Length: 552
Image (tube, rainbow, N blue to C red; front, side, top):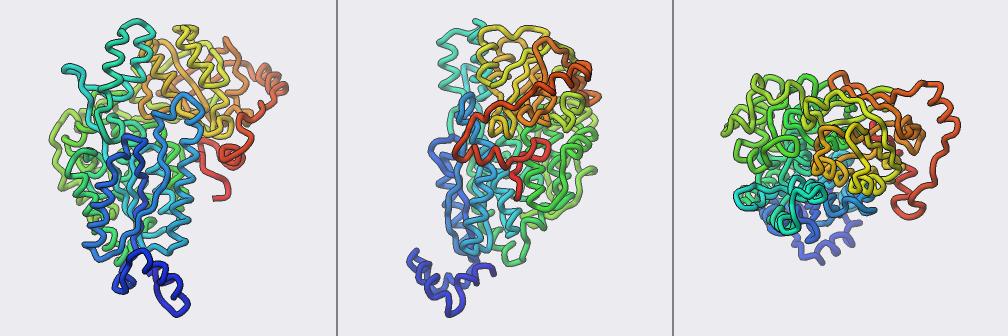
């Protein structure tokens, strides 16, 4: 075992002495050493309930014959960080988490790893880390939040807080109702209720084979979540003894399965950053074109918020990810998973309890999957849109550009009603380098929806969107403005053409004029000139490459 490096031999007397100081016995030295990477914090609702899950994992590891060691990784809540400089740190934290996994597991020669996670960048960061070091590992996502209540109305974070800001600005609701929504939208622990990025990545992880069946949708408040945590602890000891490492699970076909499930559900556009980044660490080739190709042949069979009606609790009661894979049985690859069962074995045994929450392929909500990748003169290297959350009459759209060089400027203009019907709001210099950190634009997109402009205004950015974004919002535009991409050359009044069915995003300005603008363009001064984000800006790659760090 890897842990023999620190537990066996004359030269390891000092290491053993230090391990005994933690309370270990001599009998523990021959057992598998299992790390529990926990993102517990009492700052984030998705993570406040992790202490009991840590205990359940520990019990499972001990029952399986292993020794457990807990260590922490940081967690950032995109909802709390949204709309200010804090959001610049969110994406950067993903790669930091991967580095922490590498550092702790390799420095202490751990044999296996349980990753207790939940929110947006933490799950992919942990998967990147375990794929990089290629040791046996299992992910336990801590589960989605239940819906809030306002009278008989179900509430969720995005619809009833972010979009409510725009509704209040428009005068549709008053301060009293807004206050009630604010208090009741998030009733307790768990990741935000819809198929936003956190829950998207939980579903992707299970479909990838790195979580036990039903883990992704099992509710944060459920006893099933604790049972899954316990079983994961037992199982990780088993796969350590069998030598089943992360890369033996995260194969090319497994990634294809994960993308297929993601597209069938209509998941967050952020998966188009995270899946390629995870795949890179697993030594598997995944790019934007693969995501689009799979989406084009995968029907959208689940109508989940923000683009649809249902919440993760509904998906859970309908049968979870195993039930989704049952619908896709003929299309998915039969791959090994950390559970010991193959994907097709899991899918075959699944029960579909709600025929509307998880529809049959022939009765799909849309014939294509949730995400489309657009190319054209405005995004030569690609851009991403959640097409399942775009209305039919906005799938093809032309409008005049209204240009903003920061999210703050755009948000101010939207709230002051300067963005009007027929416009395309351009938010640039918010890419991986320009942000830096590629901030999410949920606040402006939700404000547009709340103000009733979702059917008449498009938004385009080299930044990214929350999984809670809906409407004609196109992100990840590459090349980004900071490196001189075409988005840097747009001026107010330019015509922008969007054609999602034909995968086009074009700036309708003659090349001669663009050449003149390009000759005059110079990059702005970096917003951040010191600290972690300054280093990040120098090392991060383009969005179409997963915004990973160079040299990794």
